[in-house]
Length: 330
Image (cartoon, rainbow, N blue to C red; front, side, top):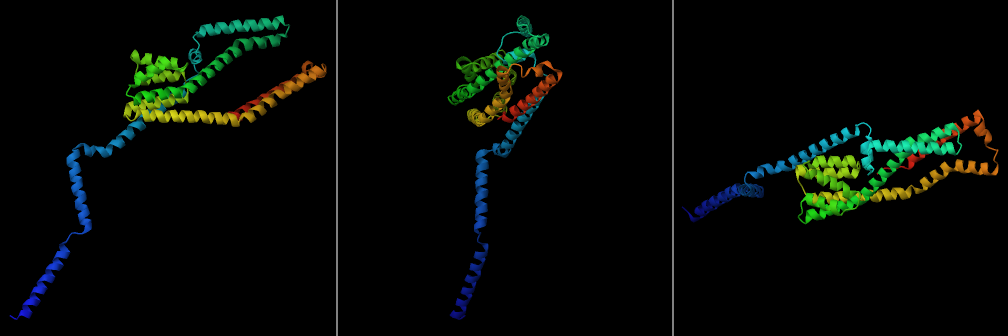
């Protein structure tokens, strides 16, 4: 065989072998797939069976959080549907230690005093009866309502600082119950009393949910409800309690700051409402002082009494509308 023929055969064999090698060579995509499969196998060997459950863990926790929130929402709706707040609970929310019997007794004494003042001053029988009704029914409840709102305002002002105490205590390694005890000893009133009652309830065997529910009954505020939600969800599903309470403290401070801004912006409207509401009485007093007999027909005649009654009704409606317009809840 000639050398030229042998050379051509060798070149043909080499060419065929090169083509086969190129065809059989794995592509970069195949290499990536093999590499990913190898890494997955190694992860499976390292993690073991628990890695199978890892993708479902966030879903389970989310489901638990949703169930907890649903239960809390149902409980809040049930509380909202309750009948009128009992007088004993109303007095407790105001921070008073008297019983309903004592409250009714004091109301009766105040009504007798107001009636005596009306008789001694020589007022008409209708005016005297009105003073008795105001002294027995209106004024005592107004005083209790005023004390209740003032106590709740003090609680809100101090509550965010108490949450900061819990956050710092949890970050330093203290249990939540110890942080609550610290607040019950060192906080300002009325936060101190509320947390003391809460810790005492836990000490005698009440669960955390029951203690928080009783605290909300004594102090029915959104801030207390938020605090209860955070603690209950953390107890049910776990998580970083310090971070959750830190975020809650920030939210409460922002709410307080927003309320201050709203109060400042609505102060002009409030001043206008006060001026408009007091203007008829001021003008009437000045007219009576300058011309004593000018307004007598409004008091002595039947038509004048009807005019006064209609004016009083319309003024009450206007004051009620203005109050709703300037009362903005955060």
